[in-house]
Image 1: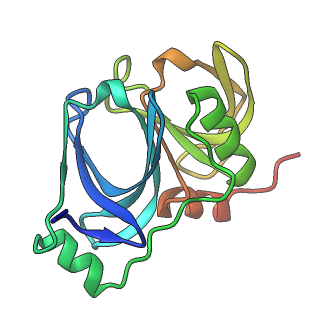
Image 2: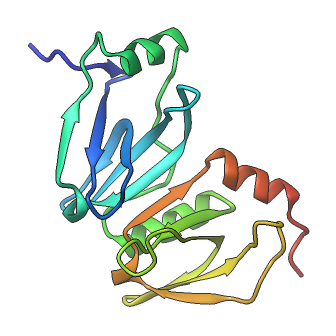
Length: 175
């Protein structure tokens, strides 16, 4: 019998990624051979806070969160209800970025192998076999010039979290 925490049919898991100093904790919603999609559990407030897509090759190990674990109990107490974001796919990094960009106004990419402590927030523009183009938005919610990032460098994508939502609400409309 499975002893892990499952809500709405989704297991609560912790993913250890040596490429980052942080672990990813959340409900595993979908996965492919290359990527995993998680509804992220904010460990400071014990609430769902957006979604994370990461490369499976960067995961050293993962573990189920037992039903009696603090995180599992907090999830039940807060009546968290993880759900798959409509239209998002994890078939490939390019497809994931394009589908997130179509469904959500902003996304955050991480390039942890090249710039560990830096993330890039922006509006999805285009993607091809080698790169993705974003219109970046600054921490002051000001739009910047388009930037292109190699797909091979993107290790993690976040979207629909509190930070992305706030930036989007603060941003001036683009021309």
